[in-house]
Image (cartoon, rainbow, N blue to C red; front, top):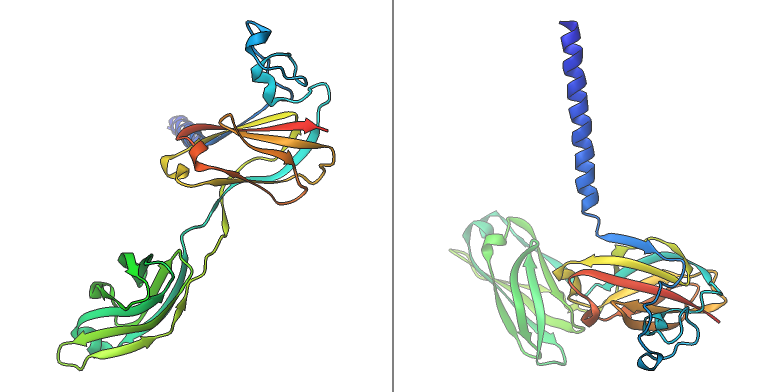
Length: 290
């Protein structure tokens, strides 16, 4: 019996181990960044005729268009890249929150609530989102320079303290904010709310963190993007603290997006959304020795 128990125990431990490994493998399968390092230019395909290809004087193989992206591999430029990231601008807009209150009797008899306010913006309309207790009650366009009147769904209101949040990506002030409440059997109530100032916030948020690397003429990332990932421009960010002897050329999906010096700190290179593709994308960084 004891021997049988030990056999069963061993089988269970083995199954647990295999299950754990399988779970780990599934997690690894979800990694959407693959790094591929090349220490020199890739081999170029031989041109049928020199007349059919432009000449590139500093490449491995002369008269080969594919080698135009490379520098002279006989003089490798070693350059440390640190804190390599893809960033995107946080365009969710600025938000301002204010509190309002209903006592027990007011909450029990609340029949209707609506918010009036005057946006002092330069455009004809602006986009605004209004939330009550973190629940959306309005998401659309508001008219600038006039009084707006927005109904609030009282299903999202609580007894006691409530939060009112206004969110917008514009830059303007909202004044004359009044919360109107109507009750069954109680007098209507008007609560004046402090003015709101929206400001444009260009904060960068990390989109994907890429691995640091040593540049030896050529380095490439393969980056998988979902449909939601390609809706706006991205930013390539990196530091190159030891660079004193060369430039870099950056391509995204074979389109050049930058050619110039790599600063020691806070490099920011824009990747236009028109160059982004759903699925596999290739970010190539090439060292050009001076």
